[in-house]
Length: 72
Image (tube, rainbow, N blue to C red; front, top):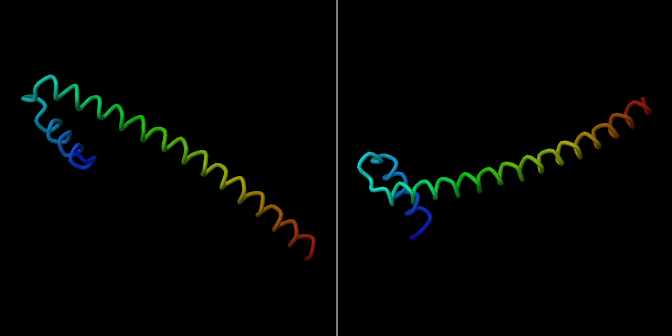
């Protein structure tokens, strides 16, 4: 089953959770938990990347401003 098909199945389970069997509910909860962890780790990684980009930009900006202030 592809990731898209699996996601569609989970969405159906969520929409019809009242009549879904327990095994489907557990399957959906496991899927959601795994997706949550992947998403959380991606956000953390991207946050670290953004922090590094900001630091690099600020370092270059400060040097650029220092060069322009000393020349003018």
